Image (cartoon, rainbow, N blue to C red):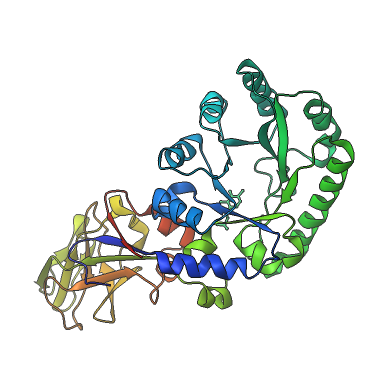
Length: 368
Ligand SMILES: *Cc1c(COP(=O)(O)O)cnc(C)c1O
């Protein structure tokens, strides 16, 4: 780990391996792992992460949109890729790239079958999503026989898996809600098996579901945030290792006299002589304005330097009055010790949001 000389997102693939093995260690040997690499692999770098996981022999990948799957195919990913939220306009492109759609309504199921037939597909793998309480995407339990009437009579597709998604798997206060989701998914699975000529595999859990509901692993699990080092709980956050560190440097130091202001709209007004450091990272890089005005902080020489005034597009200014430092010194926005989850909390956000927000213009540096 060399010192940053510009703003970088450092990605430690050794930690990715640790996290992958940690999650594998929670599963029985036959449970498949679907690595969720949507949103640029949670803001890191989808191609590098997927290639690395493919070399570790992960079973499946999942992305949100067709374009993300196409990018992975171009990068040489040959493992199956589930597209969680495809749009009808991209169905032909999915088929051209051997990407497997999640079909979650009669509208998209019928439209996909039409496209598969038009392109002379046989047994094209599709996945069916059921709604068990999140009320976001998915068929209902009551739809099963109508679905199987369709999927049993067309040769163009085959049902590769059925799945659902937990809405509160990280929240122990919502245990009853989650147990109800699991029970409903079990019913759906049973009914589907009774009615379908296809024998799909089934999956339900995301990272927190994997960790908190071992009884609900089914045939496969879908892990995203865990691979990137967050377990959504104090215990698991210490056992997983954040793979990404966001670092920058001090561009310039200013001494602000009492009564002077810092930044746009005079967001900070000094009531005593204040030393500030200007850092080349701003809201266009993923540091939202909600972290401004003293809420968020960065770490310089192991000390916390709060953001003063408003976050600019390409810069923040931080208070270094009591910190010994100089221009060119390294600045940590988050790393393994001062985590993205902690940083996010200062702006009323969560790890998922801050890590996926890190702008593409920030250079990714890999440690292997
Ligand atoms: C994003 C997503 C996941 C991954 O969830 P994590 O909490 O990051 O593990 C799993 N399943 C679905 C359907 C998703 O959309």
